[in-house]
Image (tube, rainbow, N blue to C red; front, side, top):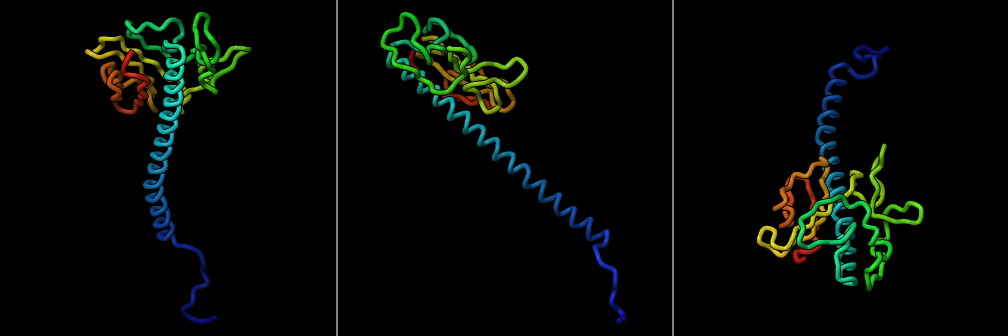
Length: 188
């Protein structure tokens, strides 16, 4: 055996602590960056879905002369509701001429009836929903609202699931915090 050569192999405690610290620091930098990319991807998916629904609303209006609704659309009323049923986008409603749909190709089918989305009782919403499995909202602003011609907007409440925007911000298409908005029309 040669003198001065150690037969001991492995890492010392100091080396292990230093290596662990480096890995933790790198993880602290990389993990938030990856999380931010996932958030941006979800926002992009939500915007794409809202634009698809907005296009369906506009095409429906171009064909029929009325805006899609769960009942009778009233341009003199300011309303807000979740984008759930809207069966008029899938099947001709009674009394609506020139319907040439279906206007959406995805949604939730139950029996022989299709609708935009369904809120799960014990699970996530199904159909055309935001990336956080919640239904979008439809906000209609009456003619004359905020001195305007009325507006119809689709809203995603973002990652926090809370509507942070004021009605005035929504009517202008200027969401607050993590809310997302797609303006369907600024003239009712």
